[in-house]
Image (cartoon, rainbow, N blue to C red):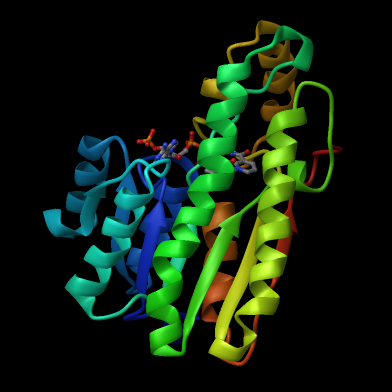
Length: 245
Ligand code: NDP
């Protein structure tokens, strides 16, 4: 596994907590060169220092601002000469029933979960096309496969991530670029902290009683990355063994 990960330049959005942070830890151990983005710069810097990386491994990035996502990726290329993997991981899940009209939360999920992923693709693609190699990994969800009450807009954004990733997969074949969708079930992170609807929060806390640790996700990223260059792992769906939904 290590030999196809060591030395690869990996950009991770949403690296300040949860799945992104766990992935940074594992890939760092496996010898990848990391550039970490998120809004909470102090958490990124603490993680970078813990992993023995310099301050230049961190770029404060709000993925709803396309120029900031471009700066994150361009910084990685300037620092390391290339980008091998773009992990579009940043996301939010302020779920609620549509009738509650939390329209600002719908907007932020659409901005972060869909447009943020598109901006990540836009930032990485020109470099990967020039290099004639690269790997774009987008994070969907079980909610990218199933819709449930209270999770309608979140599920819509995660279905969109899968549609975008599948279109991307077909379009980038001529450029020797790999694409992977990773769809986790309940994983213990800060994701549920964004839920403001008390009824949905209650239901979700039951689901998350079964949550598994974030390194479960990190291992799927490492698995997809570590394949030989002619093997393209397009989709991974995983859940806690005890999760029904
Ligand atoms: P966390 O809340 O722990 O982490 C979310 C990350 O996204 C944080 O690093 C946060 O950083 C970042 N983020 C949020 N908004 C922005 C923004 N505007 N710009 C840049 N970064 C942003 O949750 P997870 O680790 O669980 O979430 C990661 C991904 O996994 C999401 O896409 C989520 O939908 C998906 N997922 C998670 C599951 C789970 O059960 N945990 C299940 C299925 C999918 P900061 O606030 O510092 O900007």
